[in-house]
Image (cartoon, rainbow, N blue to C red; front, side, top):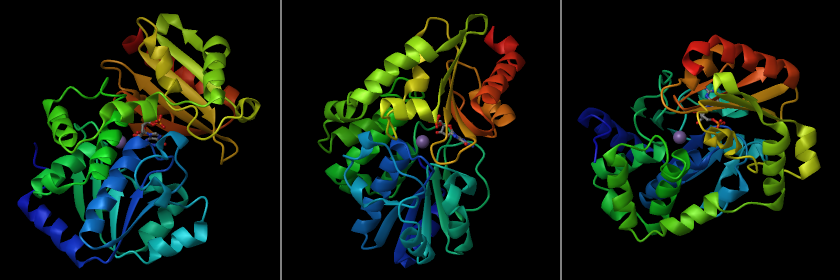
Length: 343
Ligand code: 5GP
Ligand code: MN
């Protein structure tokens, strides 16, 4: 297992958590399995320490994560703005989970940043912004939950975690690695998994709960996307797929039903880059961009340069303020700009 914090930072972490009474753990907009799983695991640990702890997210999370132990207690700002804002205002300590820039909090950003309470970042994205007193940022790790797992070990707490805590950590790591099919070659990942399995978790059931559970609407949309909407740029080894809100309505698509669609074109032999464009359900005129790549293609660079975003080398995203037609044009420009790497 790996050390996450220096001795000095660790004692600061212990002091801040010991002194706090009302801790808010916040995760990023459109929380994924890692954001939610790592936040819930942190909540379970801090609750055992006798703290009042709330997990707060800007927008709701997909249905396939609703079974996670504690998920129903997560406070969703988009659903209960006033109530969640009050919880945030009352916090005397923040844990920043699975993001590293306040802008990822969207509508919650101002309320969180206006509260002067100390902030502790636990994350695995590159280039963290400077807004936290303690920064546990390890971009080489597969998930924020992996960072948390090592940190629990460093604190001598990993032996004491509950079955539910282990489930949350494992689920988070599994989600951010596509069930350990990418970003998961470090042996330390499997040291963590060994410790989690020793808590009695059923990893096969967790896999089924997350990856092998779909609504009829999702299955039908998947077929439509692959058959009708997947546009290949074969000479560039790239693929573009688009989804509009009227298509969402046509298929009866719910939040989370399109999870993982961006990965599908990468199954095509030789494909290096997949781009998925979706109209934002909450912000008209905004297109959410998702990028996935294989091997060395840096889609986080592309996301920063063309899509006002960022992320990991092989999985990143961003946003465009335009209509779908213009967004596709921007994607084609981006692909052309990276011709030498893609061809
Ligand atoms: P997804 O395509 O699943 O929405 O996002 C994949 C990854 O890209 C996320 O884990 C996150 O690291 C990054 N990402 C997605 N959207 C944005 C964005 O708008 N800004 C930044 N900086 N990163 C993003
Ligand atoms: Mn993550």
